[in-house]
Length: 535
Image 1 (spheres, helix red, strand yellow):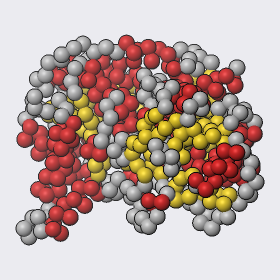
Image 2 (image 1 turned 90 degrees about the vertical axis):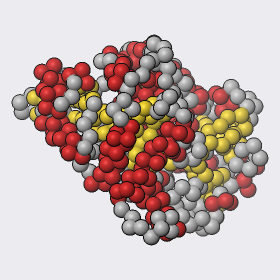
Image 3 (image 1 turned 180 degrees about the vertical axis):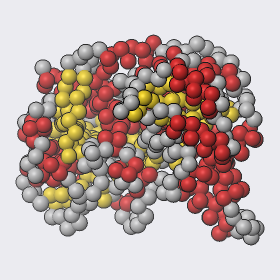
Image 4 (image 1 turned 90 degrees about the horizontal axis):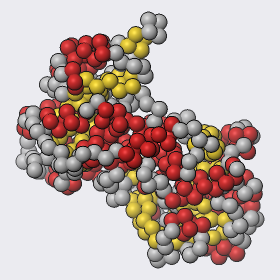
């Protein structure tokens, strides 16, 4: 079967929900028996988001093959539950880098290199490579940003060309837009959507469907108006009011018949009826009144919660599976250094210290780990959260006051965390960390092994520094258990504190593999311990 392509563009404002919409539609199509894959096309010039500040870009989502990608790929994997690869995300930076490299090699035989056809051809090649690599019946492709952005113009032109090459039966355009609400008059306004569609049509693309996002109920009169002015079938204008939970989005799209409309327009036939009972139960569980636990998330980028998107979702998955509500207190680690926000930490049932880079706020995270250890508060450390748990242990249990990571102090007397051997001598920052899926062997009867109920697991990594094995024996004598190691026993993957309700940390990022229907075992163990403390 020839691959069908569904393209998602955004209008009026960015962060309008294209990624969640694409993920939800992908789930509905998969449930109808189609093999589905997803791509995110980011127009920024960075080669990947790996070196970008979380304040600029939010979370960097890491795939099995080590690709550092946009956070929307987390939505795709959590909804569709298909592991993605590096072909699932590419940027303008990668496109220009590839074309310029070919030009330097003389591949273009001295021709003048232009946006059209050279850049647009490379964009189209990568889109088709995504379909070929995944062997998908349907490719869902999201274009980052908003229609009208200068940097997205080559992508839009590539999609226009693809529609011409593929034909209407093999391509479908979904435009996700925003209906602003005017408080003074109590009205939703469609004019920005009309302008956005006019901009899209000016490029040569007419949307087949408009998803009209809003914080307020959208009357049928507005739907009719959008259909008329934007030249779209009434049935293809789908109002999407902001939901209480993202898990509800697939059910709302199903209620409005979006998937059936799309497959009809693409001349497809479903092979099975969708089974969404698990999603309905999940949404019902989200809305059910439940006892709550309080988790203090001590981070460096808490002003932008999207920086911890997967962590937040993994907490939610685990809490739902245990019948509780995870109330997150977002604590800036720098505040703890200034003796602020401690009331929030002390009133929490558990403490979570996620990953991060750079020296700012490090001492606050160490203080949080110390408080959790000394007061027997359930603690989960992720990547940097594991490293700083070890630094705290070295300082306050082993008595090495100056213990540190060489990431923050190159000349520390006790480098309990040090740069990995294979990282030494690397000068380029982008894409050079230990990235992707690696095996981890678990110690029998440890807290981690009991949580996983396995003796070997595979987890996704993103780090340059590791526990310094010189100190391993000393740590173990004083009560730290290295309950997860690499198969060659050279790399500490999981550490935990002996005689503690739950103080477990991982060098890897378990949040990347948590799914709504399959919460991650470490998060489940963490929430279970928090629930016990709360009682």
